[in-house]
Length: 285
Image (tube, rainbow, N blue to C red; front, side, top):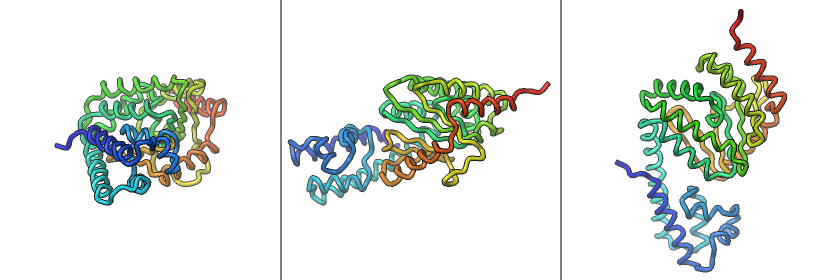
């Protein structure tokens, strides 16, 4: 069985730190970051295992420290092995239950100063009601044939939502109007969820936008995605979760977020839209 890749990543991160200190003891992590043209604290995050280094970044790191080729090749092989472990581990987490995935996601959110979520098919988990979350977990469990820990998963998702009231963080959530019309979730549950979204529009700690059905989009969106500190990208597709901190990949999605805010409804306009949708869901007679 593959070991938890977290401990392996921490050991790898410590190797990077040791190489930096051994090469130039007076070269601080911050100074190395400036030398590489990276954002402040990035080296610290990498050396503490809080942010994964990419292969191009590892190459930059090695060149800056004049790292011997054999040492670099060894680190590169280990980095690739860790990524394989992470893929297998995530798969087992999903097979083993949804609660573990919620705790894993919560750890990333707690470490981030800025959280951006864009969802095209479901309401973002950070603002789901318990009933909506339960319906989503039950649908996924039935589809995947695994993840029977629905009660624990719902509780973990509700616990994650405490971060919405943390004034030290920037939280931006964009939900597509199509999510609120989808028959995947029963109408009565959607009604309660829309009521919850109306309440969220009044939170000063969360920026919520609704992308109208008829909005002119810059590109067809095939899936939702999450960004953390504009440095880490997470995409959940039908069978797995993809993550990357490659600057070019991240830049595509940060630019897309800016475009989506241009067409999204916020504040009074968002509330008016939500109330209209809610009225259409109300039973007649």
